[in-house]
Image (cartoon, rainbow, N blue to C red; front, top):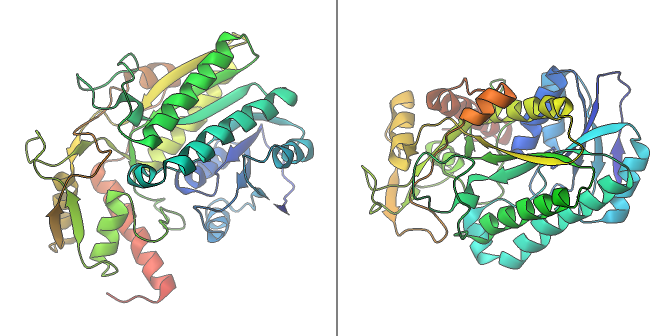
Length: 355
């Protein structure tokens, strides 16, 4: 177990599992800005340790880090023993690629579900009752009506990844029904994109990207020969899938607001679910064309067959989050793509890539 420490006095200490990952690292920044003291747990299976340097460059702080796996109960207990005054947990640690989950279902079930169960057990032992859980719009499957609200039915998942999020939500709900002292906000993310405007942190896909925007960026940078658009025969205006693309900084701020919301709840045991999206759907081709307009350079892409596990279209009604969390999106698709491109150019500079 590797431990990095700092001495600082802040309002509340928050454990952030997967805090070195894409969404986790941006949330750590927003926690610092809001006066919290984040403590990261990460096994770096889908993150780079260079993220820690980026966090320090943005915040001026050296974040406390425990390196290990959330499925390891003994490891988690040591973390909670070392950091006695943790007041809440934000749980990001999970595998997250829809397409990959279809190819590796057992890895996804083993990692995503087991890590949550181990975390919940450990939280009970140390009497920590506040949890913000990283869920997903994939729990809606292919919805009958759009935009989806939190009352839209959870449908049969179209991928193992989506099913792990459904199962995890059900585990939390069962635990709450047992009257365990647990207060949870489950945030159903839509499609996070972009990077911190400083270009010190952003999405760092290992190998071939599973998500659209990193693939666009790597194609524009010349790292990939061309982008493949998976399917152009969907029942959408341009035939490509529609998603609700949210800037990762806006998404990160929703976690901070969720912690404040949990502090205000008087119930001992509860679980509240919120959609976290912009409320606007954009197609794959919308994203490509917007990026082309930003750079004034055509992007090389081709059309391939539909990808197993993808739904046709989904986007959010986020009115509940606006009302109860006092949260709203502020950053546009264009801003997200500009920030993502700035981040890609920074990566290229660090790696000595010219384009």
